[in-house]
Amino acid sequence: MQKKENKISEQTFAPDTGDMSAGDFRRAGHEIIDWIADYFQNIEQLPVLSKVEPNWLKDNLPKSAPKNGEDFADILADVDKLILPAVTNWNHPNFHGLFSTSTSAAGIFGELLAAAFDQKAMLWRTSPASTELEDVVLSWLRQMMNLPEHFEGIIYDTASVSTMHAIAAAREKLDLQIRENGMSGHSDLPLLRVYCSEQVHSSIDKSVITLGLGQKSLRKIETDKEFRLIPEKLAEAIAEDKQNGYLPFCVVATIGTTSTTSIDPVEAIAEICDRENLWLHVDAAYAGSAAIVPELQNCLRGCERADSIVTNPHKWLFTPFDLSVLYCKDLEMLKKAFSLVPEYLKTNEGAVKNGMDYGIQLGRRFRALKLWFVMRYFGQTGLIERIREHCRLAKLLASWIEKSERWELLAPVPFALVCFRACPKNIKDLDALNENLMNKINASGKAYISHTKLNGKFTLRLSIGSLRVEERHIKKAWDLLNKLLDEDFPPRRKEAKEE
Ligand code: PLP
Image (cartoon, rainbow, N blue to C red; front, side, top):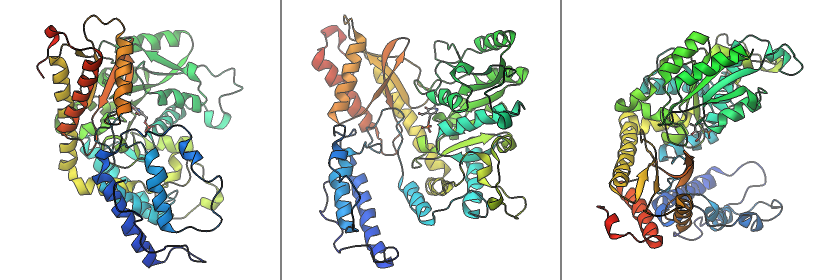
């Protein structure tokens, strides 16, 4: 990066015993914070996507660990020389691929302190701070999302893991002694069914694979023109499965699907789940954060009837990866599925919450700390304003696309993701054209966008979610897209646009 060379002026070697001295730690720590401040300050000069070829980093690093400790300054110099070039700059304001997510200074400080405390919060005893702060921040977040009080939360690393635990709890509720007997070797166990839309995230498929239910247990339901699960089709599928002797037990609805951020009709789905006595899990990994914005709160309509709901503050709440929250109506069901207390972990505090009871992990990181820092630093108003602005920018881009004859929107824009494609007149292979455009913009290093397929069409996805994004960045990406398109397909006069 463009900044002072060799930042750590004094040599900082490990002492013969123990850790770095307090003085060295203070000095090196200041240097590292300086380094990070420079990184953020200059991030727009870096390419969004790393330009390195596969194996570049491996080929440039020694094949084995250093025999003797090295000067801290040398380590940091190699961060500049070797690590930074291979970093994908998720914090770049023109990172618009996948879901644009970014960290924040407050979150970084929370993470730093969590590393310093190094809690393994399996028991209340092994970390009262982590155990209790987790309950506090999850209660704050629940209130911000306007979810009812009966939801109690637990933090995992990712939504994939949250959802896997939710489906495990749903299976436990069946009371089929699967925990004791497993799923193999039983001719009396029917095919268990989980339902979701065909737009669902792949983590749902992975959950059923991991839980031994098998991919056959997942039935994907057709969606409507706006990529939302069709409740009537769900009801039909459940009826058909029951006729075939299968056992429906869980439905996964999504608020903010990955391809388009479409919103499944949770109210109607909840109605079916109530009638059929099915566990309703809501995947709001991306869009759950939007529910803190009063005018967007409606997106969670019906979720008050769900059994569980996952949301990821590491996606759109400026919290460093990783932090995913699973809210459950009955957290005890998770405990029933997972609690297992060996002798050496028995304690006598009485009625305390022990995090290890709610999942496969024993030790748990002090993740709540970074979310607490983020919530306190920005406050509810600050978080709301940022998410609101991202949604405004997405609508603005959508309006430019709508005005143009050479581009078209391919999905509604309920949050801060825009799905679109170039469609200049008289071009046969629009898929190839759009894929080529995406590859060119990504190779430029100036912006990163990704894609999906909608109704068989190659679709560009531009996600807006960086803490650093401003209107000028969206204009830059739009201008770049137009320039690249114009270079390959110069506009004919009648296609002239207003922008
Ligand atoms: N669910 C949805 C709707 C997503 O978009 C994603 C990732 O983008 C996930 C789940 C998985 O998230 P994670 O990486 O936290 O497992």
